[in-house]
Image (cartoon, rainbow, N blue to C red; front, side):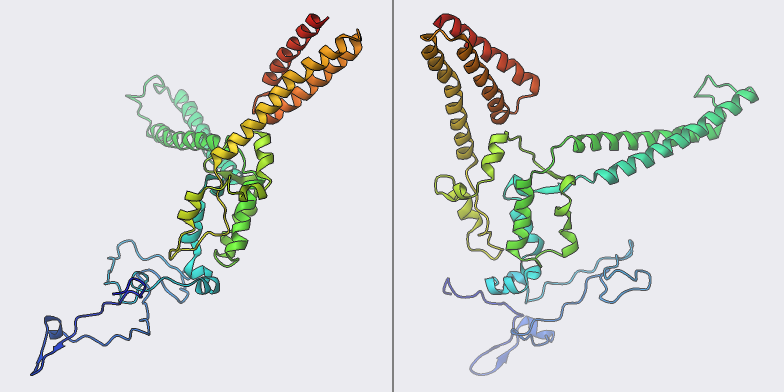
Length: 368
């Protein structure tokens, strides 16, 4: 078979003809209904899926099957996605929800960490924590009430092993499970809350993919999560300096051959049956990081060498105020640059600025 031809669809084995008589095959002992290759068979809904609305679930078209229902499995029909040629781009543009959908979105989302954004559900988590807290407080009040009754009755409150009060034992057991649930949920929420929020660059990438892929590729109400700007977090956060975030805003340099990752682009943009991600350009993170490092080194050397020559030039004029003005100006510029090109905390920036100022003052004393 030619490599460019479409794959054949293998149907049920049919009787073969000889010159004298028809010799039935083993499969002909059981009659098989004829299959029309051009007309796909009608698919029956799987167990638990009803096309018509149910009385018990008036607002749902998908009703779960009973838990004790035995699953029914049938052989895959001859007309299935695995046995047909890949769909065309025209078909994918016409019905993106059918040919692209979540498979295409998941492929694109998994291709880079900046594309995988989820909601932290901060408001809902706070509500659940407050509810769990209130339930624990209610149990605590009941426990205090039981302790008070036991003190009046002369019961022994100094033992767990021989405590005859079943109500108190029940409250303690319930309190144990409630506290475990509350503390585990609280720690998980604290870790998620500590994650940095998604940047505007990351959010705009996802919104742009929805527009480029097709507005109908994902159900409208299922992609509204991307509009919750203050509640979105990246699954794999990247700590970037303000300078790096500033460079990320410029899109044209990423289209240059120097910054493009050819291996990733060829692998993800290759011809396959899936949605080709040709609207996304992947750049080499190492090249971008090296560019940021180069800019940082140039600025650092300039901040060290520049004031030295300037102070040396002013030393011949015996103008102390001018030299102090130069040192003050370079200290201000150094503080601003340090806040832009690093992720240092404020006190670390002040410590580095003080050391830089000391170096300039020493050189000024030497030059005089």
